[in-house]
Image 1 (cartoon, rainbow, N blue to C red):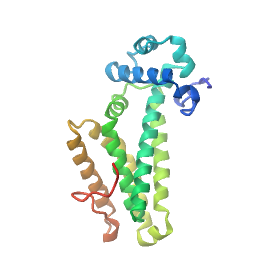
Image 2 (cartoon, rainbow, N blue to C red):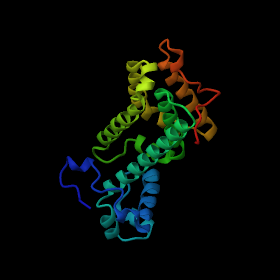
Image 3 (cartoon, helix red, strand yellow):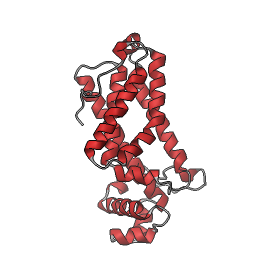
Image 4 (cartoon, rainbow, N blue to C red):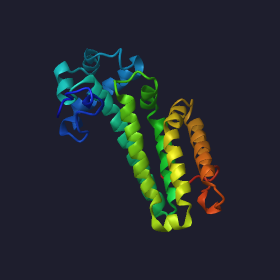
Length: 232
């Protein structure tokens, strides 16, 4: 595990989520304690000793596993992002296996899964939205969003799909959706019930689908009232 050695490095995780040390029971207990305290008190008001006391572990254990409080915060966020990416990817695979090949439909199915995941992890979404974050965290989030855009744009590069679709149009939709995702995730996280969250997600997907309706009826999937098939 490499500790951050400069201000520039401080915005990057100084660890690998796949590091065996982060898969131990001790590391998971530290992450759970930090997540609870960050949500309740905020990042700035939570000290390393607060976290270790809640986890019933030593300060040295936190530094051994994560290196710093900032790295622990980043680990919580990156773990959330990994779960979200896996959720979207599994949904896209399931929809594709069901016979859907249209790139935009696949993209919207993955987007829907991602937004529903924001409800399930609403405490983490609210945590990042409150503004009390480590230095450089906003830059890190923007980079993650850009990565998400690149990965999901791959869904629109199927030659058969692009032959039928407006390639520039769907590229524009992906860019718009990606920029809007943060705000919509925050709205989903602030819903009072899962039913409200699901309805908000359905409305959002319908809006995204309407954006893609540039005169080519086949571009627009049925989403409201008849949702895109998905295992979520």
